[in-house]
Image (cartoon, rainbow over all chains, first blue to last red; front, side, top):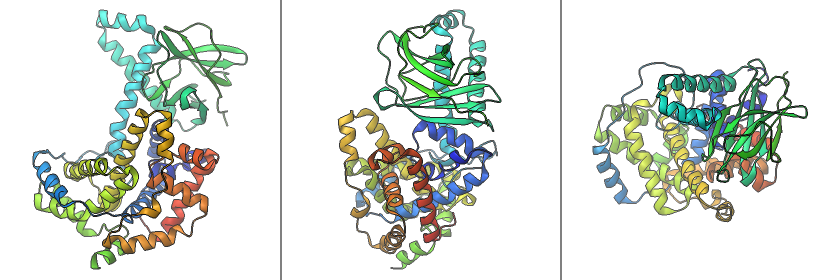
Length: 264
Length: 195
């Protein structure tokens, strides 16, 4: 929990669902490692619930019939019996879309985004090869590895975050760096699709020199992508629009440049 | 009146009754669910409507939330907080999800219009059973600084992200983050919430 003071202040925003999706997911990683934060979140959620109770309304009478009728056709979920990771933390609402239940369900979505991005990072050619060679197992393994790497960076004890990078169209970028792992994850929310035939490409900036760090599969609202290659001595990261497949060097002005958080 | 005292007295109307009832609901008890419905339908609808405003959408989301409570009752963990907090957290999440998906679909102008809605806090719906609760919340809200109160109100009652709150209030992101947190902490202490 050292150096997570900045993340810790997000308990309030998290408790009232005021974090954009990418930050929400990143904070949940942090929660799993920070029992004090989880406890505070529980308390602040309970507090927020009181604010909700203060605006109680009278439901229309026919709604009761409708809901009571509807549940007769809805199968109930069994209790969760294992105490796997993530099941012991979180807020009052552990299931049904809040708390850990939500967390568990949110992960595959991010994993999918990461997985798409990973596929893109290998280039269009690689993706076609995979389809024709049916080398599904290897692809799955790479994907799994990527997901773990993303999770590993986000949850790393020395993870540092720079957020607030403005991207076109009001989108936001956040970069999380673990110097110990020497890897970085780029989180984007609200990204619009690139112009047709173009892709977003990520770069590490080593001083003046730009080093390719993978492509950003877009079209999704939220992305979390493990940047290709080691962070090394990079002091910043950038994002540009490139022809499909990416470029060895940027061919356009960066849409955004973000300083990487420093090691402490 | 008894209900009002109960709501105000148990930190969220989540007395042992509701938690007990949820346990029975988890075993498939329809009568228990009807009793749960009677306890939570009003609070859920009130909260959802406060965030969404649109009456038809609010009812739709409320019904989804209620059915979801039936479906996932077995996941409620009393050691993680009160039953009412569990329900309300989920209801708020669903309402906010609806706002955000609507927002994603809307163009910038529509978004601006959405942000222009007046704060919801003062337009609360009349309902007898929440009167005491409301008075207490109002009283505690008054103990916040203006920036804390605005941040909490915009985020919770209107379902905005802290970034949107920062933009509306023309405050730095970091300031809004911390005001949200210390505002809620102050409310927690004032309302005597223990999670």
